[in-house]
Structures are given as C-alpha cells and as structure tokens.
Image 1 (spheres, rainbow, N blue to C red):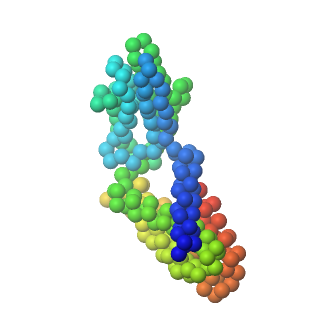
Image 2: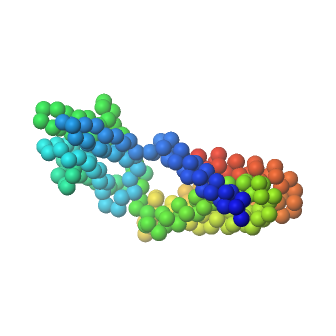
Length: 249
C-alpha cells in the first residue's frame, strides 16, 4: 500500500512539473510584469490568445491614483486606440472580438503626471483570437489530456511495482486518449474555430495529429503487453514518447 501511494504521488508531481514547464515555455504564455510608480506597484498582463465571448479585456492592477492609459492596437496596418477606464484598484480596457484565427498587434501605454510607460517598449505583442469554448468542454478536455498523461507516467512507474496493475492502467490510458482524440478534442476544436452554427469543419481541422499518434502508440502498447511481449522496454518507450509528444501539443 505504501509503495502504491509513493508511485501515485510521484506521478502527480511529475505531471505537475511537466504541465508547469510546458506552460511557462510556451510561445503563447502571457507577458506579465510589475513595476513601481511612486513606491506603489502596477501589475499588467498581455495575453497572446483570446477565447473571450464578446471582446478581449485587459486589466491593469494598481492602487496609485492618477494613472491613465490606453491600448494601442494594429490590424491590417491600421492603428487604433482604446482608452482604459477606471475600475476598483486599476484600469480596464477592451479590444473588439475578431474572427477565429485573426491576429492583431497591441501594446499598453500608461501615463502618470509627466511620465509615460510603454509596455512592451519599442515593440508590440501579437494577439490571436479564437472562438469561445464553453467551460464544461474546456474542463473535460483538460481532465482527459492531463488524466491521460498522469496514467501514462503511472504505467511507466508501475515497473517499480512488478507490473501488478499494468494491464488495468493501460486499459484506462487507452480509454482516456481514445475519448479525448475521437470525441472531446474535436468538439473543443469546433468551438475554437467558431464553427458551431456557422459551418462544418473538415476532419483534418478537427483531429490533432499528435493526439492520434499518442492514441495509436498506446493501442499498440496494449496489444504487445497483453501478449506479454517486450513488456518493460515497450512501456518505458511509450511512456517517454507520450511525455515528449505532450510538449508539442
């Protein structure tokens, strides 16, 4: 029992670390920062992806009085400006929502007395718009993806438990990735592409090639394991391959 708890805790910690590293190293990770004005903090975040239902909202958090600002954004080489509005503990500005897949470049310009703060300096951030994804679809997609990753790692660590529950875990992994790849992720992509009630996307747009690879790898793994062929080598290879492919999803 103690060995099982250690293996499950190890799997969860590894998944957490993988997820953290993947997020912070992603090209779509938001630009965040904090700087000071007269000894008080001003915090900002510039997103690179927008799944908002109506418009993209950018919020500046600060307790300092007298700070004003605007969002400067460029679309089709035309520059626009949106003034920030005062809210409790900061400022809020909005950019209209565009069609899924469309991009703009934007930045924040704040002013306080005679000082101007440009974020980022001498550059713009690219913001890509996507369709609104309902929370249940988003949550189920997340659970299946990270659940599949968790069980993949747990299968690899089952070697330290003499593979007692390996077949059971492999069935669970296959079920998770089949459900994710064939049903849930295509639904997720349908919302992301804004296709709901608009058009029928083709199969290539809906299926994620890397998820297909992971799914077929685990199906092949299940066949080999249930036939008791190359058990240790196969499970180590498939588990590592799943982790590596996960970073490219």
